[in-house]
Length: 343
Ligand code: NAD
Ligand code: WQD
Image (cartoon, rainbow, N blue to C red; front, side):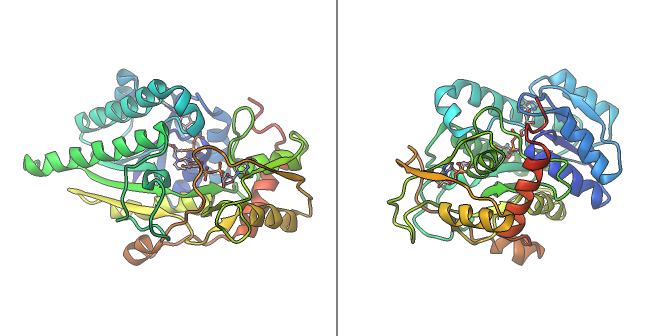
């Protein structure tokens, strides 16, 4: 297949470009570089041994998207482009709704005008809110979101279901075929150390914070909360290696079926506490990570992890890399690129 990857210069998008090309697919990338560097696309192509056509454009720019669909035959779109910072979304909700919702509305309109109605959408485990039952299955309650970012993702999911539902109601001979993927906590980097996560400013995420402490850019980690109802009092998450996450996108290409919207969790099904992550990082890399305990971070949930069995049962796909791989590869990327892509 020839696949348009929106947001392909970003953390998950660049790793997905590598996996798509390795699986024999073609890829075209569009990104406005608002949170990334074109270098990531060039390096993804280098890892895969292929050039990746790159368009620097905002997906809200209809004419720019039209040009891409006119110049390339696109079978399917993997849609990563959007803003993703939870805290920022509560300070700038309008910007988050505008970019994420208008991006998806413009993209899907241009797609249907060009007869391309196969889409894989990046959603998030945060649409499950504070779960009543662990592990979280795809049929758990959704939409009770704790922040504006997660709500933009939930609304985008609903828009996509409405588009497909309308095609079915209207008897459209070529209805939308959509897969919604809900990611748990992606960490790690490509084992080459050429591409990885490069957050702007001080990282919000646990693993990039740890690697920046390890490389000396930050002094120590603050562990947010030590009194949760978990075995060691710190928060539990389901961390998944970004290369596994990327390969999950290749696996679901076969699940894109006209007239259906299918959702899958992408996680490992195993939760780790913050302190377990710190210890695993120290053990994998032989580096001590100084930390202090701080108060709970507002909006944080004590514990959540996925039930990843639906995608395994239906498509025979599951995450393969363990926590040691995630810690080693995260550090390999950071130590080889202390300043990330140097943006
Ligand atoms: P990222 O910020 O590294 O990548 C997103 C990319 O989209 C960036 O390169 C950015 O420049 C681009 N972009 C943003 N708005 C755009 C626009 N209007 N037009 C064109 N390009 C635009 O983020 P990521 O971690 O790679 O996440 C990819 C997707 O997965 C996002 O939609 C994110 O919400 C979702 N997601 C991420 C995580 C995570 O923990 N990283 C978890 C769940 C879901
Ligand atoms: C993990 C754990 C923190 C930093 C968010 C979004 C999610 C996804 C990823 C997009 C928590 C603790 C963290 C630190 C800490 N993004 N922590 N000190 O909050 O689970 O998920 O980002 O969709 O949707 O909600 O990830 O990596 O920020 O935190 O103690 O400096 O590490 O409290 O328990 P989170 P995270």
